[in-house]
Amino acid sequence: MTVLTLPLYEIAGYLALVFGLLSFSSRDATKIRIHGFVASALFAVNFYYHDGLNGAFVSAISAVSKILSLTLTTRQLTIVKVMSPFLALLFFMKFNTNGLAGLLPALILVIVVFTDARQDLLEMKILHAVMIGIWTIYSIVIWSVPAMLFDIACLGMLLYGILSIRRERKLATQTA
Image: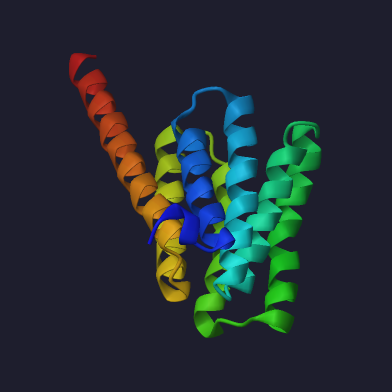
């Protein structure tokens, strides 16, 4: 199958993969948010057409949150992020199309709230790895290949980051 014969939603998924990896690899906060917005919006389309309505909803919330993070104050953004899991839970109770697996995106939103509250980089990366692990399970359940590839690449990058931070901290304590 060539790119020309892929359905548009699969092309959106592969583009989301590219923008998601750009977001994860960037060190500029604005680029992280912009690339993350594009990735989340494109994954929302991909998930929706894979009958992953819950994942599409969470990805759409994530996209909106990333755009809002460019304009809102930290306090306003915290309110949006804290309300997101509650909105998602209400949505999932009404429109869940994936059984128990459909609740995984709601769990991800809860983890996002706790991740954003962390100041320690190692804790943040560990929570991100848990979150991406849950996305991986969800991507397998709805069988979105671009999302699976993105999740596996992100897990690899996060695990490398976790090991690097632990190694740096260990060396710092040994030399101190």
